[in-house]
Image 1 (spheres, rainbow, N blue to C red):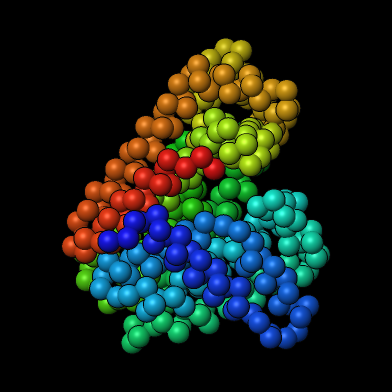
Image 2: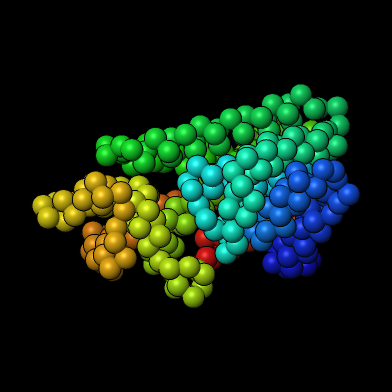
Length: 326
């Protein structure tokens, strides 16, 4: 059996080759060049891989669901385009965001077009079960939008709770990973138990993945992360670590955290203070325990499936994502 790392790398490369050729010859150029630009940006292609692994777990070959895997990757990039517009972000993966490279109207239209292209590709892999598959895909989009709405709402609230935050990332991040796993199973006409177990894997992996992102933002090595640490603090984001610290802090330390909300972010020279405060309050360790909790839930779900190779791939994937440095 090939190593899981090699399988992931090979399939990621195949997905990227297909994405890069997807819009060749499309007209007008003013629409498809911006779409092509976002699809050719770098990324883990995690959502696409989840569709492939889930389909394999249920008896299909990777080649049977390449179009569906492209669909979820296109969908993911659609969400990034609109997220960047809403966040006024200037860079994504080290490159100018779509609305900066082109203009706002072009980015909005390109995003709209990407969601249509995603559906177009998804339908190619539907085999007599299109209604169920399309319902799952559409529900995933709705939940991502709900999660993004909550995320924006939290920016203007000073009373966000940790449980509200967990609900938000469940919708914004975990729901998409859950949808990818469910999609691969449904296209395979899997049974209820297989669909349930794979969906649970995706959901819990997504939760662990996002909290790991929150943690890396404050403890990662800047060279490995590829950007300065503390970005969430600079932007005043209410992350798992920040909200946990706010719950635990008292006196001047609590006021310092409340000041961050009032000022809509920290100053660059305050990052070390907040990092040390997080460590002092034990929230970095709390985050690690939460990541482990969701990881173990994901592993428990996937260990119930029968396909040995797929089980191996899923076990490797959760370990690789949680041990990542960026």
